[in-house]
Amino acid sequence: MAIQIAAFNHLLNQHPARRAELAIHVGRRVAIALPPLHVAGVITEEGWLADCDGEPEARLKLRHGAVLSHLTGQAPQLSDIALEGDAELATAVGRIIGQLHWHASEDLSRVFGDVAAQRMESLARGLFGFKGQLAFRLADGWIEHLREEAPLLASRHLVQRFVTEVDHLRDDAGRLDKRLERLEAALNNKQNLQT
Image (cartoon, rainbow, N blue to C red):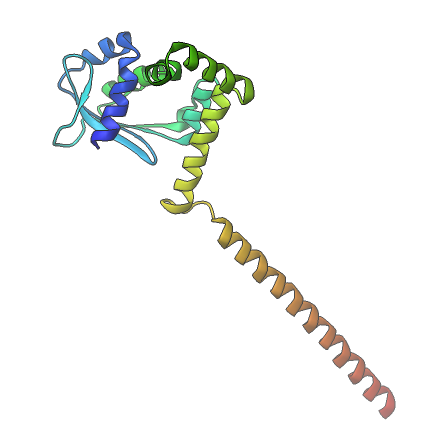
């Protein structure tokens, strides 16, 4: 959980105004879930999230559609967000989270320098569009989650096995159909000979 909290706090660090809004709820325990990512903790005086024991007072569960809407600049659907516990706190935290955006160039500049970071960001935007590339990575991770953790999607291996079994079944049905036709023809010939 410490890694998720550190990543969430890193995102908050890029938005001091949002952190100040979150600090209003000091001492409150919240949980934010976007499978397979989960973060829970207590809000500190500085607006950070800190690890804590105990159940969250409010839970905010985001479905995958909420993030895809956010990436495309649209407002998420109400069905993409589930609030549990203290609805007022969950709504406030949800509004703050909706205003967070990751500034990749800031992180890249620490590693590669400002000029290289700007060039990398421009290249990424030019090739795939930064939002598109980020959406692709998120979608890839969620598809993996849906296949392995919450099996709503079949893996490629299972689909291939299913297709192969359907092909065998089709071939068996075809052979059975031809065998029935031969038996019917033989039965008709036998009846014609007797009459």
